[in-house]
Image (cartoon, rainbow, N blue to C red):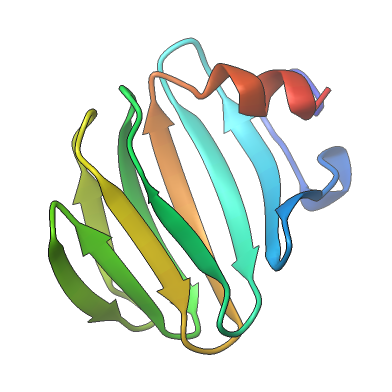
Amino acid sequence: MADGYFITPKDSDQVEMAAGVYRRTMATTDEAMVCEFFLERETLIQEHSHLNDQVGYVVYGKVEVTIGGEMRVCHPGDSYAVPGGVNHSRRAVVDSLVVDIFSPPMNDYRTEAR
């Protein structure tokens, strides 16, 4: 990932995190990080939690997002918020692109991107 104020997709390679889950770490500061996730149809990100706050936005597709046991189907333009420490998961109903912001940044996403 390039250091600086402006990041383009060519500055950050996609990382295949798991089968059907592709992450591109974009702009990052000491306090926040933007990541783009492409999820192939029927891909499930298992329930997990982390100390980082996570807010997201569905760019395209359809994603089932479960936060603290509550599930919603999110469509383009929908967003969600996951406070740090809360269990969450998601499943792409169709090929989907979501953008997530983490605060503080996910350290492993930062180092994997370099």
